[in-house]
Length: 390
Image (tube, rainbow, N blue to C red; front, top):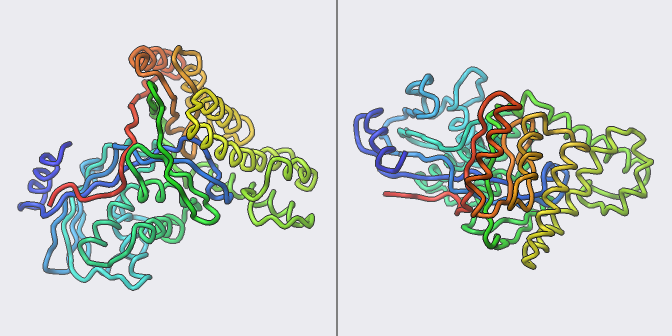
């Protein structure tokens, strides 16, 4: 849906013309998976797919929202004060949640508005559709109600919606990658300190292909929180042994090898090992990309995928099929799952000349082995949230 189509949908829903059109991207993570809540580094980038919102102010205290992606929800209406968490509501929980968390900071929405939303991110695919809409709503309200917040504050507010309002034990990577996105750059983010730097993503004749399993995953219902708890337990055992590490991200591989005996549980050792070594891999990947060593970068991407499959165990048959098949194709530098796992998407770094044959070959094997189609998209690395029109 283009901007004109979105404005027409707004007109169809509400009977008048939208004042402005906003956009908030999705994200992929090149490397550094499940490190954000372990105090490590991540290396994500915003992409050109995302969430669009056509907006207009109202003079009363009524808020009306509608989503092209969830037609069964219809037009949803509520008052500006009706924003406390309610498990029974639909996707408008994100609108209410952003308002609720902003209100805790003293920023209140003092009149109503109408909003029509359309996203071209597949839902529950690991491309951060939730964080995308959180940053869309945050940026809209910040602009329309003159809150004067900087983008980092809106990023933190989006994470607060996930953690405090919705009860998801997620890290800050998704919101940060989206809110701080920069065209043709990835963001190397230290999740311990929130220090970050932009790194040009110069892949030569290669592109990043997103491979969608089309298997839905729900973070609340998956083993995401279990993995986080396992890492916290492993860290607590290391700390109880007298070591002064605040997070697993503080440890080098040498530190971890020395202290492994303190964990004394094979499963917890594997979980913590992934967190520690993935963090080191991420720093090495940044250096390789900066130096133009794409072969080394691809090897590190592959190693990340192996660790996620065997040490962290967050892949599954669908992701494994995509990644393993991708690695057998000509012109592929590296491939791995991206996002939380348990379904969702994988990425592959593919020579542009091979993209068509790559998607056909991988798609054919996936259909044969899994029984339904995968989807493929070339990832264009894009800027963060912005006003498109008005």
